[in-house]
Structure formats: structure tokens, C-alpha cells
Length: 218
Image (tube, rainbow, N blue to C red; front, side, top):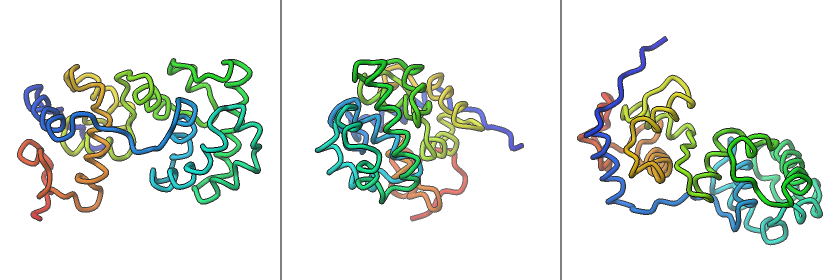
């Protein structure tokens, strides 16, 4: 197993996030939603799918089903018609119906604000729970996806062998003043600049602080 590198020093990490903040003070997630429930559904649907693809499907869906009860009234087959362009749509439809029923039966139709309660819902893992906690309740939760995992290790902001380790490193290494938006800054950086195959190092605002050895010239 490859040895995990040590994280950058505090001063460098602080400068990195200062630059992120100066470039975009209030970064936002790209999944469309109108309330906590539609955010849960959107994030659950986004597993192994693009945000753009999910947004295209949910634009019409959320006009008719923006609460757990309305989703139940729509029914599984009705839901499937809206999300059939999304990967794994049949299993996702089943999960959405199950979690909607639980929200109605156990939470009065409201989305709970605890990670444990969120993770107990079908199709909702730790990453989904953290996204909801961060975006809706503004908790400094770090939802580590493939983009954040890549950026965390390449830059050594948060090196780790798996997503849980990277999440802990972000919590430990990123200064408190940046914790709320850290997840969004990192995911957007990974999605548009520090991409997987050929990172756009020439356009990177932290290029001089990044220890990644295989930087691109352009």
C-alpha cells in the first residue's frame, strides 16, 4: 500500500482557503432543490450521476412532488417516469419511496437534522447526510466525493487512503473559519480545475502552493 503523504502545514492551508474565499466568498452546491426534502432526494439521485443530469430530471419532478406525501401520492412508477434518464433509476425510485414513507410515518413529513437519522433513511449514506447538513442546516459537515478525495490527496490539504480518512483530515486541517464552505470550494475546484485526467494547472489559483508533481504546463 502506498504511503499516505503528510498534510500541508497550517499556514499554507490557510492561504489556500483564503484564495478560494477571495475568488468566491459564498460557493453553492449545484443540485437544484426547493426545500430540505427535495435536497435529500436530489442528492440521493446524484449517486453515480452528474448534477446536471439530476437537475434536468428533477426540474419537472419537484413541481409535482416537493414533499414526502406528494411523492407517495405520485407512486413509484410515476416517479420512475421522471428519473429514468438517471443511472440506477429503478433502485433509486424504490429508495425515494421508502425514505418518503419513513419521513411521513416517523418524522411528520419533515427531514431530520441529525446525521444518524438521515443515514437511517434508505439510499442515504454519510456523504448524502453531510451534504444535507451542510447545505440546508449550515453545519460544517464535509461530504467527500471523488472530486474532494482527489483534490485532498493531490494538494495534501487532506491526504487519506479513503473518503472517511479525507473527511477527518479536512475537519482536522482546515481552519475553523473555512469549515462551512470547505466542501464546496474543494468540490468545485476538483470539478472544474483539478480534474482527474489532465488538471488545468495553468488556471489554478493555488498552483504555487500545491505539491502535486505531475502538474500540466498549459
